[in-house]
Image (cartoon, rainbow, N blue to C red; front, top):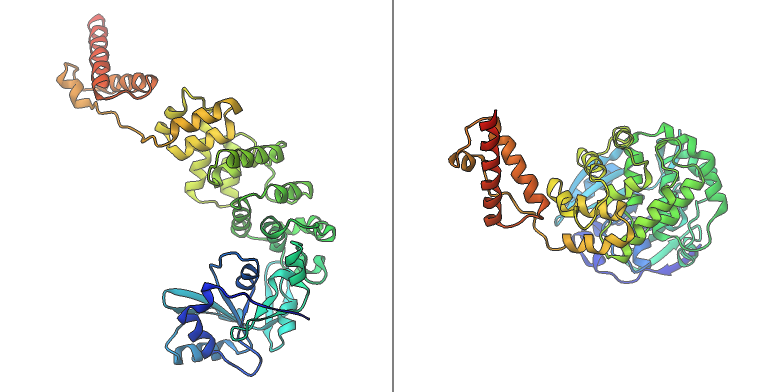
Length: 409
């Protein structure tokens, strides 16, 4: 077993965490920090969630926390997980486990006291790192430290077996590869993911959507997504994948980097899909994506091809984010800088002319008011949203034209 020391980090000094650690002291060498907090601290990355492993049984964990004045929530007690809520933060505490049975979607577990046995049921070597809160000693049972240093992502043990235990590990593999990879690709792991891809059909669409969303939300998932496409990972749940998805996603991410634009989840999704609103809506329905994301697809596809002459009109009819994404996705290269410049620090204006003013100007109440107001708005947009004075000039012109037309009827 490889050992090292956990570097000091701000999260280790939270008083609430110290109270939890003190409450869970036992004779089995625990509690220990585990997983992401250990991995990311070793990499010098910020830590948002801290998970704790313990040999104590869940009910004992609850009793000890409550005795220490810490709120204990049995969030997943049947699988050994209790959430400790203290000082406005939540910490997941999980009893050491071993798998009794798995079916590709969920596992039946038994509680254990053996740290290596618990580590052996985890997915990747870099996620099976434990650290002693008192000494900082890192416990590494499967060479995760060397894999972390080499930016190499490996399954623990046999990749086919790990995937058969939970097919979601396929998508997790590509997510972790996008975030922590960069070294030599594990060909056996990729082959195991490709072989097991059919098992993704057994998973809930919500679980698939959550992982896919996490992958696409990473700063640069291109290399990982290319491997997913080449390995047929999308086939079971995303038949609408565009034949040019690889090139389109690469082009989008390159533009984001070149123009310092934020990651947009709707844009990342649409880069993968055929440019068809019906297909995009099917994807959103199948994966049970949020209504906001679903409508975001429709708005961006309705936008058409942005140019410096229409990009503000797109933003006016939808919003700035929609227009910006449409630029990143669909504008020709030469138009991108000017389109973005026209959106930068531009507040979407409002038409000051209302129907009541048109009636005061002589239009009879009724459908003609609405029609004339629409004509004024169209001319205002065409002229790139001039000020209130120009709007009133347009209104006068449109009302005069409407009244002349009415006289001829």
